[in-house]
Image (cartoon, rainbow, N blue to C red; front, side, top):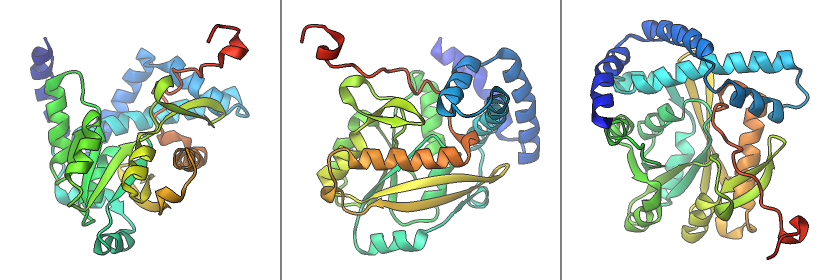
Length: 297
């Protein structure tokens, strides 16, 4: 069944990816109206926005939700467009800043860890980095459940020289490649299970945070770079790397995770539209101590 779904879908996906950008965005406009009619995760989006921006009126939340859905349609089709995107298009559509100071890290023979959120077009940021810097980009990812679609995504993500590694092999990969200058990337704003989480307040909500990037940064003492992907106009992005933590071993426990969440939060508040509001980010609740709940320890 998985193969059947892929092979009946792939010709259509390839056709859409082959469209020129002007036609692609007309399809996105149509897709937006279809998505609006279906009500795709409407309550999830509205609830996330209401909880994140308690001071905004209902009308303001509705405007944000509509802007988000329009952007989500663009993001889905832009990601699909990677199938047929040329190197020149990748360079033009995702302008990378700050390569000079990253070159300095390269000359100093320093690998580093990248943390970023589901903000802006994170898929295009990969080629933007690979085509403009000297470090080997290694993206840590979670494979799709359908192996056929997963293979397609792997091909899309690696076509310009980026490497990808399943999350369960991240440590092994970093150990095996210590002799290579790498930039190991984590999309680090996903919901973490209680037993693996650091808890903080993010966008006015109790939020679980994966600590994997922090633990690996401490283990290897790799600097941490935050990548910010800003939408400048439709179909064009600017990518800004920022040295967030130069010396991880000089930080306090959970300081790296907290610093990342504060930095991402600041960007979302400035422009909420391009964050992934349809994700069930707050599906886990903090487990209260047994002394408070009255249960046995």
